[in-house]
Length: 309
Image 1 (cartoon, rainbow, N blue to C red):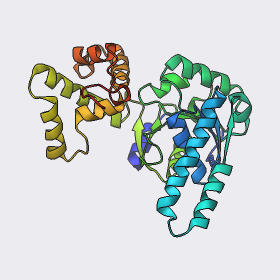
Image 2 (image 1 turned 30 degrees about the vertical axis):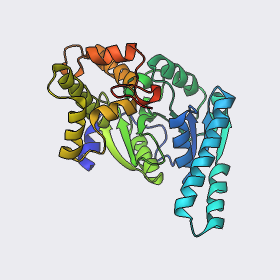
Image 3 (image 1 turned 135 degrees about the horizontal axis):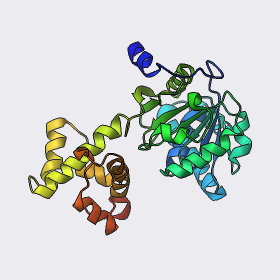
Image 4 (image 1 turned 60 degrees about the horizontal axis):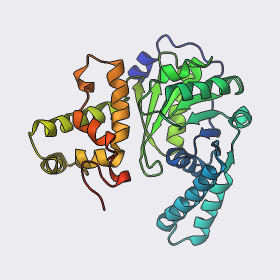
């Protein structure tokens, strides 16, 4: 770990503020991912402001957080109902909402976005907030596929910008990928690692490479499985059974693709293919393109590689 962080931090610019302790967090995006991060942060004693342009989305997010906390309490505080209720109330007291990101970032130690996977939108967001946030504030993106360096380029705090890639559902999934660009300072990187630890997560460190660790391995694996099926090397059912029983995976690759969303997979692979047109790992799939065009996106639409009732 020491060697790795030394290597990726060579040439980093010096941070304006050192050893930032993250206590106040602004999360941009009130969808499932943003709300999940907010829940975990609030449950671990952080002051959280959840931001979205839509007030109804924020109300739904808070309601969802409360419902999830109640489910947590049933498991962890089954014999201590009063302690469980106190846990819920403390966590909810740590969560506030706003439709005005500009006003709330002024008191934030960390601004983390979990919005649509669109580079221009993310750049515009951070470019505007960069002018309003204090010098010590760290910016981070939860992107699963876009280069952190490209997102950060719209700001003047390249040394205070990194990636925090959570996995869905956030309260359940233990992993966080912490991403450093070539400009991320060691102080910023350490603050993001410490924040992840305080959330109760296991963090892994990664350079700013396409897909980071998990998606960089997972999506090419899924794409190769689809090509195998296209070639007629095996049925999707047999391939799923083989990977579950042969490798001990909880889901087969076609089941997993339907769960993730075929449109999501295609969107990410399209971006990687455009950026790396000569890399066969990122080659397109006619079958995947066809299913997405037909609106067969997986479980969320009732049909993908499999049909769902």
